[in-house]
Image 1 (cartoon, rainbow over the protein chains, first blue to last red):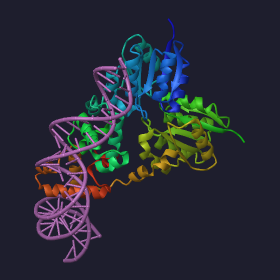
Image 2: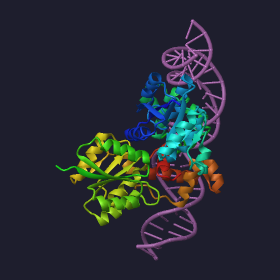
Image 3: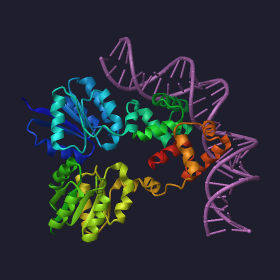
Image 4: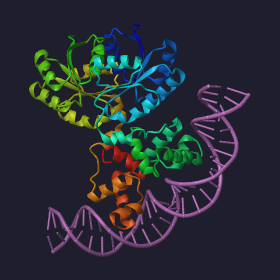
Length: 207
Length: 207
DNA sequence: GGAAAAATCCCCCGAACAAGGGATTGATTA
DNA sequence: TAATCAATCCCTTGTTCGGGGGATTTTTCC
């Protein structure tokens, strides 16, 4: 069987280096590229047509979740493995929703990584163990809505403690606009005031 | 000048591989060992007498903080660099207290890592940049205001998304009372609305 | 080019909040 | 015992927020 073409996406240089070192020791894997952000990743996907993309979930600007959605939309056959550290498990279900076939902890051993790659390439799901626990986090899952970039912007400013008029000033838009975004955020998070909004956003690592 | 003998401790194989790959590209650094836990680290410290130990802060069983204390107790001349991901900065001051001379984010580039190693080896302190900038967060730390039990109670209810009247109902007190507590919370946290309040509380782990 | 999504802007209304000022009671403790 | 602090309650004023309608214009993507 041919080797599996793999692309790795992570904003931490150390993780990229580590993955490179580990993947180079696996015969059945052919590392075709490393990307430090989603934009670069999309370019490499186009250029290298990998079979499997391993991507960090939380990255600045464009998250792994959004990246997964984009890749799946353009290349449905590419398999995606989400990677994250411990405390971000709440985002997994979203990744799965966006078409991810696997989930890896960054603490994974070489063997686990290999197994994950081969599994998803064979159209199977692969999920890191140690996921069973932590009920509260499980509950949060699926609750993380897809936010537009403007909504994220507004959300972080709200979290900073700015009022609608202040935010409007900063963004050079009408207070009405900010209010619209704010209302959309409340709707998307299914909460009915700022407190609930910020608490959920904080727990999901968005602020 | 002789090369600096470095030992790296981290429970994530990926990080160890990454550090190995990155350090091997730095001439002035001689990587004498990799340890995946504190016990193994102590053995290697004894065997290899490194000049600098780079250790993850959060590890199972024995944390980097405890490891730093042990190393400093037995070998006071060894320099220690703490390493962590973003959201664990609250632990830095503890590391420094235990004798750490440097702090690195896991997102550090090869250049930053090199600078950190050479700095601490020259008896200087090295702190990752993103930290200096983000002085605001530093301030947050350790300065979690003292809340009374009633205030904590009110705070969690606010975070749940309840309004003052609703909270008053739950606690069988007047809405005026709840409002007083709320105002005291705003004052103590030095913020001027609910959003800022919840964000800080969340960051401090209070909600 | 055309559909869909995102971003923008507008209005009304009532409820909730923020900021300022107070006052009283009871428990702790110096 | 005097002082302090926590917890309670009260009032006013102005601003902001939340919920409910809309509408228009850019982007984005097929």
